[in-house]
Length: 107
Image (cartoon, rainbow, N blue to C red; front, side, top):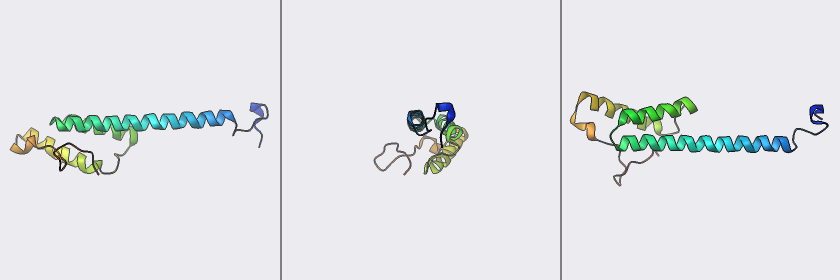
């Protein structure tokens, strides 16, 4: 089918390729932004700032609607730890650690 607004060129020519490339670039930038936001959440949790970590997760939820797989469990843990901090319990200093003792992203 010929698009007459493009002077006889079909929609699969350079304009469409440019749109596809720009769309792919946008998707890649979006993924990098989500990954950086999750890193900020992990950094906040590593410092014991679970409220801040949860705020970073909310940013991801606003942008992506849902968290990436595995992050819901981490979010639930941080909610519990934040609640404990506010309650003043001794477990408030606990941080989600990997087997090596470093903060890690969910599996």
